[in-house]
Image (cartoon, rainbow, N blue to C red; front, top):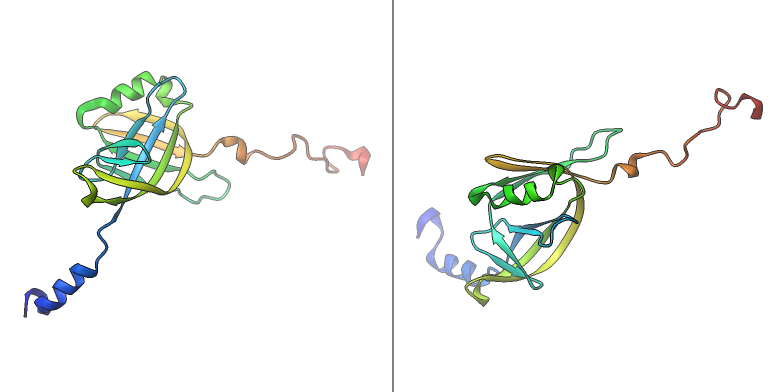
Length: 165
């Protein structure tokens, strides 16, 4: 018996049947005033996916909350190693107002090259509501507030338009 009470044959078989590909998560931050987007991937090495190179950089994503009467928001926290993202935030003006963040799920085959090569399997784009840089770059994500506005400006009811009723 090998470690954990599992035989060596079982471990060998499990390793041979396990997929070599892995899922990694990436972010592409874009701003209309900047020529180059910031591309990062939460992996141990850089990843090339669909012709784009994503730099390895640790980040956490707090998923969107679900509060009634409020647009969902998420927070992206990125390790600010090297301070390149601080420069990106500074160049993007006003806390990156007008920026968008594409969240991507990439299937990577680490054996294809020294850099992981993969394909984007899923993505979504959210608006950047606010951005600040310190030890962590904090990016608050949401959707355009226009989506939460009423469809009509004036709702006619007996209180607003008594002559109609």
